[in-house]
Image (cartoon, rainbow, N blue to C red; front, side, top):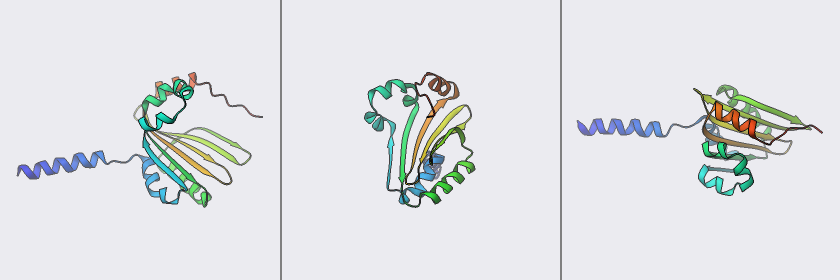
Length: 157
């Protein structure tokens, strides 16, 4: 009887650990259509980020747990539509949208309780389609502070 109870709890723990984030499910379903894809823990990816950027976004980078990058080239129109449906179905919120000369940049986040659990950056042009997903644990307060303190300025030409 003890073995059954132990097995039952082990299955529950393993199942909860295997729970996928929303963007991870999109990544898993579509990585075979990518020209290039990579999924890496944040501590590895942060080694390749220039020191100037690390200093500017230190608060954000400390809260990011995992990066996923997908680069599509062929068939990106249908994948873009599929991604847009995915965003709507999983109730992501758009932070900003920039559309200039056929190139689009959009940033989305997925919030659970008072924490931002995922950030997804979409960059789309006529030829390429790039998605960057960040699994995070950022409070709204920290995220607002990061935005306010960033030196990023959007200007139009």
